[in-house]
Image: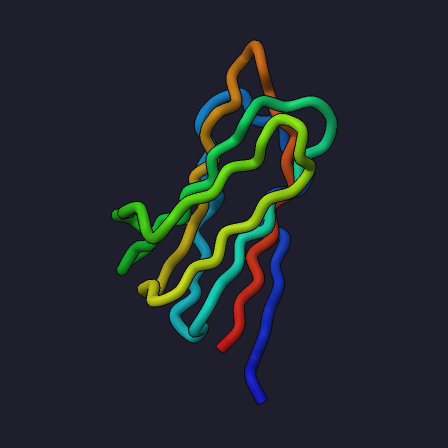
Length: 108
């Protein structure tokens, strides 16, 4: 039986610039799924997973995804990552903010 864990990383935070989630140690997991929900009006948001060997130095990892302005949720699948993950969310600005909820689901 696999071990699984789902964590709330961001809870209804308003972003108005590029946003990186807090680093999350994931070395035990084999796969990850980032889920991002958006509340209210928002611009098109781009979701880019990032991986790190140490939780300090980061590199874009795998294919990103987008949440279009008329959508309320997006997700990104991540595999073959190192010991740490975070998610970069871009597209929000002071003129076009977004309120997001971010979950990280891990399985291994």
